Length: 299
Ligand SMILES: Cc1cc2nc3c(=O)[nH]c(=O)nc-3n(C[C@H](O)[C@H](O)[C@H](O)COP(=O)(O)OP(=O)(O)OC[C@H]3O[C@@H](n4cnc5c(N)ncnc54)[C@H](O)[C@@H]3O)c2cc1C
Image (tube, rainbow, N blue to C red):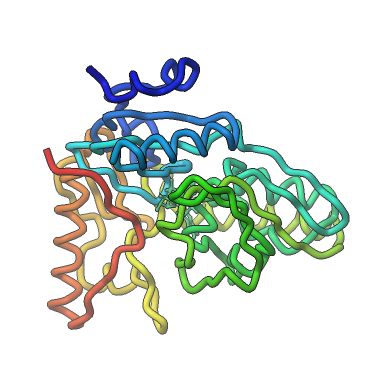
């Protein structure tokens, strides 16, 4: 008997059992989630969070899965995906109220079209706003944390809270919101600007991404950059560029990306990550730290 039978009718119908997480991660690898649910509104998030707490069911929140490596054994418990139902942008002067499932690229474009500037750098980051806030995603010198003025969150107790700027802190690819609950919405403060200039920046950033990044499935940068040098350079100089294990390859285009050549497993990627770390440690005595979040169980 599945535990979700205790859920109310509509929610129960929406829960998928043994859902492959390879369908929900940009690396296209990862075993199944025992239970998988995409809420359509905040009430459903509250209900699911309270349910999992009452039943001691581990809860894992995901957005687009573009910074996640799910191990091949999958996830015991319930995966809650904040997706399209939470994709919206409401604009009042320079303040945007944005759903946590909104794509970063969409947000960058819509702001630029309304001549609001400051978030052009988000274009091409293949994450949702919720995931971007948790990761303090950024590029080309900008990062999301500096634009966020408040966050609406369903806490682990199932309470809906609004945290304002003073309660938030962001650092390089980190925020103080990890593990605090489910982000459902945020307000983003931009500045009045020039539509043409913003759209030009967007095109430039997209072209640069196309030039620098591989197109095969990946999770972006695997390791955190060091304060004084990019991890990719260390990996390349250690001789790991192009190295393969199973279907995983250190990208020949950008050494801090590991790409899935089609048939990679999570364990191929993890083994390759270990090899890269070992090679960099041997050559430079530097311990690379993963930027991607590794979750789930081995087979
Ligand atoms: C080709 C490529 C290029 C990339 N380029 C960049 C880049 O330039 N800059 C950059 O910073 N990153 C980059 N990334 C990494 C990734 O896109 C970002 O980290 C992105 O912000 C992750 O968002 P997501 O929705 O995919 O989050 P996920 O990967 O789904 O989750 C990431 C973390 O956030 C948590 N989370 C997600 N949504 C919520 C929510 N609603 N509430 C609470 N917790 C949540 C998850 O539990 C997890 O801990 C790139 C990835 C790829 C594949």
